[in-house]
Image 1 (spheres, rainbow, N blue to C red):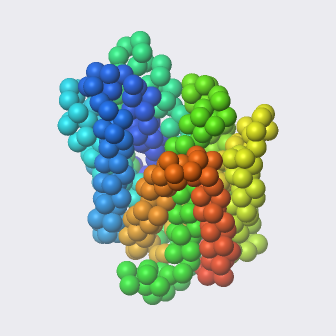
Image 2: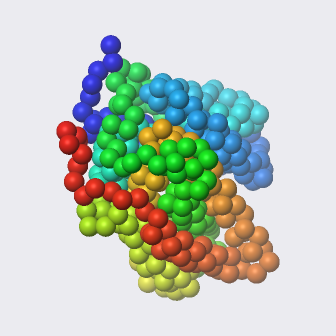
Image 3: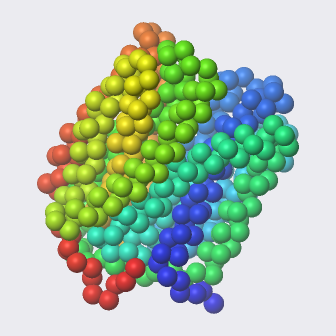
Length: 409
């Protein structure tokens, strides 16, 4: 029989699953040279693996969203976790490129399923004024899990073969999925206190929901900048600044983990703290973070010498500060009955307009001018994000400053 578990314990289990999610997503990059050597793959073939992941990740989300709003979310989480963990295990057993390609397709679908459903699930565990912090904890798995994938692959791959990290990474996701099966799902909308208007509660209304769309577009421009930064910064440090590729990767990886961890937690806390004073808090915290991120990104690109490293850290910190507030703004902008669909539309929007093409655009500009010029597009994206979020503040839904009666976290 499903057991009632404390909301924070449930959040911890979901965060652990998200941690496994990002380990499984990034682990191949750590052993990529070993895989290329065994299968005699070109850089283009390796690039197509990532393209396959993102394409099916984006395509799956809109199909999963309506299912989230109609069927038990716990079941969808369990299926998604088993699918991507099973695909990770399949990677360890593969002996050809075609199976590797199929693995990326399956992982994309499985992870899209999980990422689409969990914000809706978490929103029903905590009231509006706590969601920034709680979603920040959940999304803390992004920088930490990504770094863990690199560390696990880098540690086990050279000594035990590139397949061993995939065996190790697959098992925790399957185990946590089994734990989820025994948990009781929260009632939809049980922590909501906002009125269910047409804009917040219907599919047609979603496309007129300016609170949702300004948060989504602001997040899309943020994703554009982050995608470009994460793909090209190690190459930029090596090619333009003359740092060895190995050191560039270690430096950037270390900066990302520290900046991502501290900024994600701080941003969630700031959003919730100021939400007690103004319903615009999530948009305001994000807009201010992006505004200060503008000069930080410019300095990261154009400064030479030791000062560029604090600038890179500051740029990442100020951009990742928005993870909790923007995701909380998304879930608060719609009613419980529409959250799955809204999150699916949001995922499609932010990746389609963001990191699905920003690395390619930066690379294309770099081929015709310089990598430094290509990188400058991230500054433009940050400026657009600031403008959209400042505009979106006027549409933020009203949120009570006090918890709903009887709700405890």
